[in-house]
Length: 457
Image (cartoon, rainbow, N blue to C red; front, top):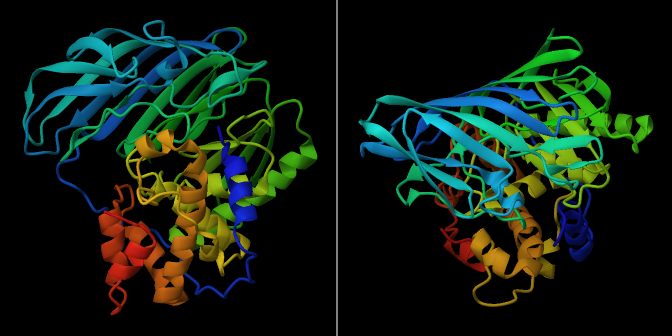
């Protein structure tokens, strides 16, 4: 399976040499308008999660309680909700690493979709505008392996460990399977308050902004709060930490495992602060206050993004890409299973802009494997054609965006990506909406452009 860092390296190698950067028009990083384009059928909306967990001596087992309050935004009554227990992919169903018990606020059914989905039937249908709350006890046991959910020796990584609400939209409930080749995650912007009771010897970098207080003897209680994020991730272990603040005011904490030097951490801190400010200048101010970067060179996948929290190897290109995901997947959401290009192509394009690459000539390297291959294909297609996923979604996708910039002109493309991010801030992007936004900025009919670049939708 291709790693994210291998994907980036392979795409760079496969494409023609890149020319010097064009001068980009300056864009203010002022606060966004927050007028997210909304599909009124997307529900349950405005989720608010409250989680309280206690970790064992190693940080590898967590037990406690989670509850989520939500509103039905759709005209169709809400008779049930689904929890996605994504990390049960990493177990042998029905022996799962994430266990939900003692459900309140509804009646739990049987685990579905390889134990990654749990239906909870509500006691009565929720009409449009009505709210409900579901609660449950939670147990998480982290498996072995330097994975986005796993551990590398005494360092534990808990990406996608907390159950999140599935989305119902005009297509129905999204209960897609987990993919290890990319991402399956599709969730709406949510508020989180997560309390982690852990040994004081362990650091717990996490999504959001954290505060600590003394717990029982030898323990610390860390409370992390995050507004308008799509997920919550954390890590636990005896990390060393290097911190700094970007010129734009974003605090960055770089956590590293024992095999990584302080010099490497400082280098990655410099990359993180520069990349965050560059992305903010292009797409809108980073809204999450701080960002945690967790480094381990044993990550098989290279890098992985979560809101305000990324896992990464020591690689400046990979880190710039993962931090671009704070906008493309995080702030501007998408259905990562059915439209992976909307975050991966855009994050790679943003990385090129940060590095001063214009992608000149890179479309010359495009060679389609079949008539069915398209930039906009879903992870169902890419899981069946995994050897082509990186080449097409990362490589051809970003090259298509560079080509679009040449059609529209640099100034118009800069306006497009900035204004599109603003109008979808905390919302959900779709291919159709992006195509419409691009078309609105030019009198040139883009139909043939989309056809040539195999961007459907």
